Length: 90
Image (tube, rainbow, N blue to C red; front, top):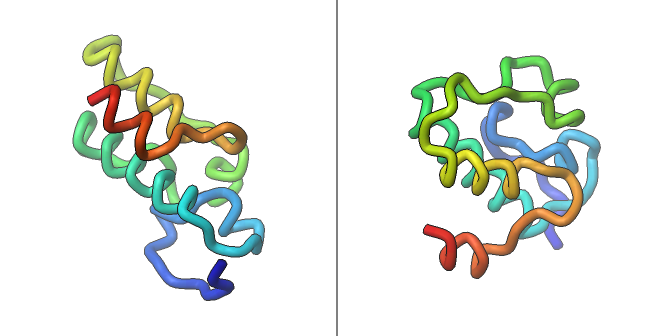
């Protein structure tokens, strides 16, 4: 595990914002942010990192439900979906 702080704040995982060491799960989190941005053309979290830590975000419509369900499995603190499972779903 790497203990460095690198990245754009809007893509940092809750665990990194809480000062925990980097893990591959942080990359999965960032992928979820990118998926959300592709779907809605905005970021799911504002600059307020407390919303990231609490995983407070919303979906803007009920379209693309399969994609929304995948994002819900990624943007969680515990039991984040693995890359292998993401690839099975897309």
